[in-house]
Length: 154
Image (cartoon, rainbow, N blue to C red):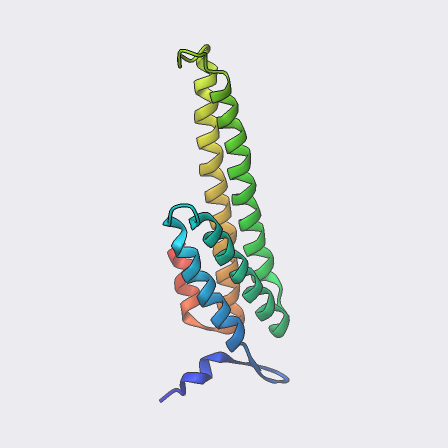
């Protein structure tokens, strides 16, 4: 039978490395990230969850000598964050040109809304790709099957 703490220790040529703290931080970050649906504070909780996951990946990467998980997850996070900001600017600029009566002055303004939505979709797909690469790298480094399942889920 496998000892429960064995999964917290990763063996390297120099010996075992304890990643229990990083694992717990990543778990807490994942749980907090799922609370994004809560009104008013959900976005802040999601951001906090992402940050905790990033810190956990950075710690594991430092301890195991491989920065791929952290760098890929950070790239995915930045792409999604920047995509949402760019899309919000595009969509808000489309709404800014509505007349006082609420009628669109030009069809291209309606097109801006669709462009904004397309930017969000592309950003989420690209961000998910890099997050998948991060979890695949974590599986390669640690051999923990849950990381592979997470990557496959994305």
